[in-house]
Every structure is written in structure tokens, then in C-alpha cells.
Image (cartoon, rainbow, N blue to C red; front, top):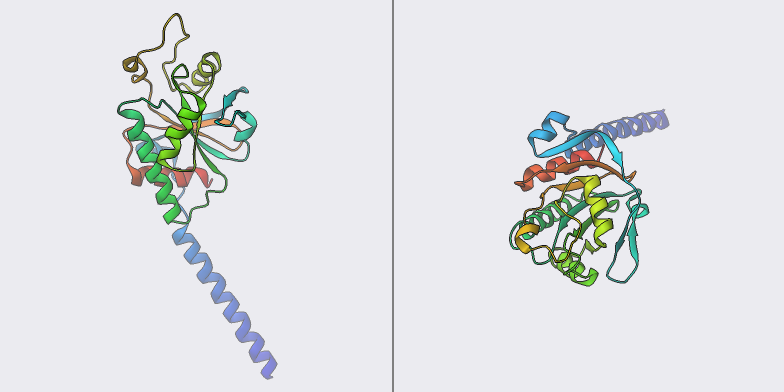
Length: 214
């Protein structure tokens, strides 16, 4: 008799604990936003993700970041340059705020990565752009490509007015006129969508969590 009572109490306890866990998890889990809500909050999700062709971006240590490095990772990719006067540091600062906000919420970042690609490879070495990126947060990786590769990648992602080189380097004013979207690439190495400026950290955090937990 006593054993039956103990078993019943144990089952009741397990049931209540399960219900409470589910309730708490529902309260703390990021809310999945509709496409309309995402758009209102500054994220444009492509109707169909676009597969990227392979590429090679130079790391500071001389190794290369390729399409394979995108697999199984949600990747934020931003295009800027180390001598950018205004837009790049503002955007990088907002991304730093995003990372810090996600850390404070204990949001899983093991399958997330943050990449800055220079659109000024004539002046930025791989070391230069990585140093610039890492000053905002140690998780940022700065990468460089020769202009033909850069042109191919930016064309696929539709993010920068990067023209083929002729006889001289682009002016700072011309480079500063690049499209300032922040690209999101999914775990299948596909162009998934983009965040549009101006950036608001609460909206950025909300949309990022919603999209990357789907």
C-alpha cells in the first residue's frame, strides 16, 4: 500500500515537473516571427534560399575560408573596410551589441559565426581587416579576397557596389557608398536573407533569434 502511494506521488511529481518545464521553456524560447513580422523588424527573408558558388577568402594566418566553412553554421557576413569613416564602425558596433545581448540571454552561439569581408583589398591585407574586426569582438573574423573573387561573391549576395579594377584604387568616398545590408547565410551555405539599416538592437536580437532557431 505504502509503495503504491509513493509511486503515485512520484508520478504526480514527475508530471508536474514536466508541465512546469514545458511552461518555462515556452516563456523563455524565442518567438518564431512570421515573414511579415520579420520584415517590419528589419529582416528580409528570401522566398527561396540561394545556393552560393564556392569561393576562397584569405585569413590572417594565410589559410582560406571557403564555402565549406559555412556548412552547419549560421553566418552573419558583412562587407566593409578598415578605413571606412562612418557606416562600417556603426554597423559593426550594432553587431557587437547583438552578440553581447545573445550572450546575456544564454542563446546558443556554438553554431553561429560572424564574418567581415573587406571591399578594399588593395589597401586592406588579411591581417589588417582581421585586426579591425576583432577590435569590435573577439568572435569576429576579418577576411580578404582578390577583386575577381570579391566581385563574384558580392554579386551573388547583392550587397556592395564593387567594380572591377582599372588603373587605380577606389576612393574612400566611392567605397563608403556600398550597400550596408548585413547578410545571413544558413547552415546549408545558402543566402537566406538580410538585415536592413538602420539597426535597432532590440529588433535585431528578436529577428536573429527567431530566424536561427527555426
